[in-house]
Image (tube, rainbow, N blue to C red; front, side, top):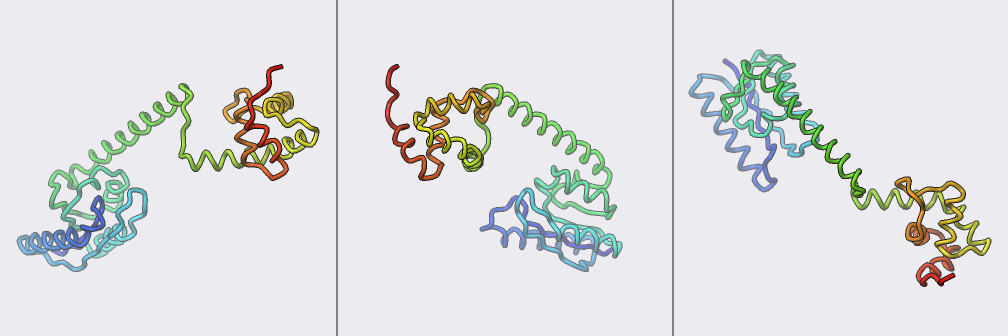
Length: 223
């Protein structure tokens, strides 16, 4: 029997990669010796991220299928719960052995793929429900950097209208907000445009709005 040894560092801290790969190499060598198998190739995948491609894993599968060998990996770990990993094993049809996970084999692979599919769907539903609930409560979503980029873009889009109002002598943020609202401009979330939103936009705009920025820092006078 010939085997292709597959070593990977998924779920391992970068400081422990070499130690783990050496341990996997030793475990596969011991198993091959006890099973009377010949290791014809060793493929090492050092990618550790959750969402990155694993070309060496695909290459190991292709080599095992081409040579009629079994793919052997010492440690499945979290990979045994990943849909892309299980689906790749199922689609290629190459025989495999998971030394640390005896429950992962050709007979149970179909069931594990089904479980992983249901798990992904359940996680997606939970996330969508949580996002919808947060939005209904008025919470701000997304990273601060993403919100800043959106705010900068919106201020740039409204800059011509705001500069035109300043040139007309309308410098109070409250009056600017009222005039923009009259023109049909709404807040980013679709609600009314208030003074504080205009103040934040003015802080992002050109030097022509310096006078308005200074006015924004002063309290509104009572009518």
